[in-house]
Length: 612
Image 1 (cartoon, rainbow, N blue to C red):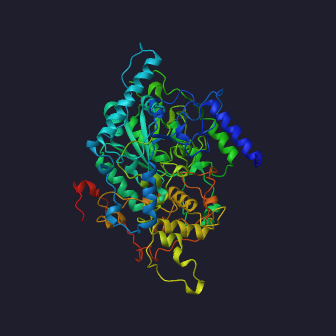
Image 2: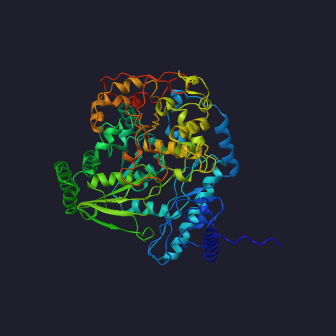
Image 3: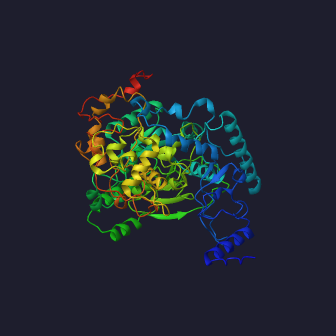
């Protein structure tokens, strides 16, 4: 008999790890496993009914000790699992289907298409209860109510028609707690696609059932052209007349070259928007809360330009008290009294990756909340005192059910890029809606093997697929597989997705009717004010969207301003996109002139948009 080959040290360690996991009842669900949602018995009994089903994928698992006081996996993302057949089908389509640029009309996004009224796309409510109920009975009642909510939602929507949405009851409990204790809700959305992150059912529940006010914060305005910001703002007000809108960004100034980025350091005390949030709160509280301390703090932050970081932090400490709470299931009824004890409580809620933590840091004037581009980074409900009379509550990001395509969810950063099984269809969705070739400056894979003097140098006439784009980017950046040294297409696709999430390969969707009202928004009298809020000039506004070829390690967008970068983040060159080049479909891009003129909300004039 042939002698058995002895195990290597690496194989022995792997076998020992498998044995330990089997003893725990948690086989194959370590933090590095791509199938982490299949775990069963190794986690605390904090996950609720839906987490035990085989069609739910649990994302962003973190290692933890059972002896620890806090379970970091308690509020992680729970999304519906996609079948292997569906993933392979999309991957095949990305390889074979040529990209075709969509019309400007298809770039327009109507909130009624995202959240149809007849599809039951609400969110789970906290069931009725009383103080005579035991805590265990309340939890069981909440779990039963949540199961009925899921059953009703899935029965009214065909299989595959719903977007990714949160299946973790623990996270919904955090939302209930924040809504109950807040006086005014800051609903934070990404200006690039605000209706994607604005559930109408949540707005009507807050303003109708809870009798509270909502301020929608249009965040990351540094990533969007000023005319489009104005159009979205007017559209939101036309759909929800009692809604208060505020523009916000944690990064101001021109961001068109890498050299400018290297010289700039993000300063929370100089964000654009805190003054507008204060004015909106003053209007809503109508003198019932003394907000003078908040106004004084904003003035102090603005005057602290010459102070170093330590001095600025010391100044902030004098007005900031902070505590964290993990009591989402605490038995307390919604507060009937607004502004209790003369304190205004602002609840910050929104989808993952819209910049909630960045907004809080900007309001405080220094970093008190860690930020990351990874969805689900905020793990639990957190409370901060901005001033003695203003309190901020930060809720974990929640994904509400909708009918939006999953590719757009991924591009919006709602789904973690590192967990995407098939990124190529999302790249195709992006390239059909952006001038990708003039920004990325890549060559078609069929031309890469030719000698340099034989390569085609004019506008691209070859058809592109999503796979071709990823392969071209891998070739340009030198991404190779470890064994065969082939182009690492998967890594290139993930790098492009991160560029899209960060806003450097920017996809800005538009409100209904924008294409036929473009001239109106580009000549709006509010344009100068919005450009000033962005920290730009009208000349710099021209090229604000083309940022893909800048150094990522020096990039600080409002969604991820500091050191928390993904391992495979792309190290881009210092090339800038040229607006006059080909858009990847054999058509030159256009430049729009900008002037200033009359201010009218055209969405109120055109009750039904009739733009063909």
